[in-house]
Amino acid sequence: MKLAAVLSAVGLASAHTIFSSLEVGGVNQGLGNGVRVPSYNGPIEDVTSNSLACNGNPNPTSPTNTVINVQAGQNVTAIWRYMLSSTGSAPNDVMDSSHKGPILAYLKKVSDAKTDSGVGNGWFKIQEYGMDSSGVWGTEKVINGQGRHDIRIPACIAPGQYLLRAEMIALHGAGSYPGAQFYMECAQINVIGGTGAKTPPPSACPAPTPEPTPVSKSTSGTLLSPTTSFPDPASSPAKRRNLVRSQERKLATSSKVAGILNPQA
Ligand SMILES: [Cu+2]
Image 1 (spheres, rainbow, N blue to C red):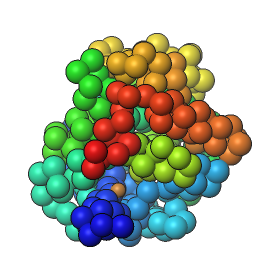
Image 2: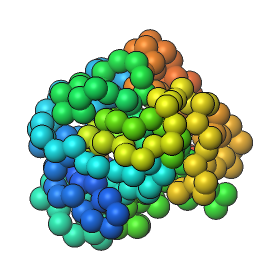
Image 3: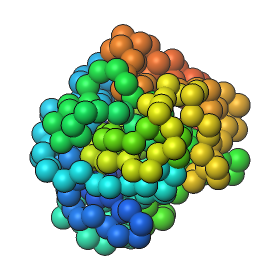
């Protein structure tokens, strides 16, 4: 391996990210306050791992006793930082620019947001933002937007406690499995003022209007269309792995994203 390639690999390995705090109503709730943050910023790459739900081994997370009040229908903002110690909001303080891919958000209704592990059924997706028509990925939007990832909490859901799972997926290594890098943490929220009695399956809740970040198709047509799902934390490990592998096959054969698969090219 050439020296430049070695240095590049080291750079990528240390250029990850953490959803480190939640902003609600313009107020940052504090680092790790109501968000289960890990001490290390590495990704989950094994999609059969329970850590795909709310992170965890090999990145153990810290519990938090805070449950953050959020109004149903309100926008909240997941704040992503390169490391827990990163206080700036420049692109390098968020995530390395090589990390291109979709951003997503999920909710899960729980009886106690402080103690529920998040593993298993009940997750529903409330956002998936892939690549826009100019070829700009969701992660680029966050990297170049001070680490801010806006998420609309649906108005129609039942009041009560939820886990809010914000996720960014980096595809630069996704030409083979494992390779896609899944970054996620879970916030503990208490939704108040919800107009519905639903803890909806994905289609039961009307799409929030306006979408905080519109879902877009990739220029390849199907890669990240709104109906193309990345592995859902609620689906079975085998199903998740098959999904990732099919995504990776599409990626590997898509000339449009070749530059992402091989950042040095
Ligand atoms: Cu990384």
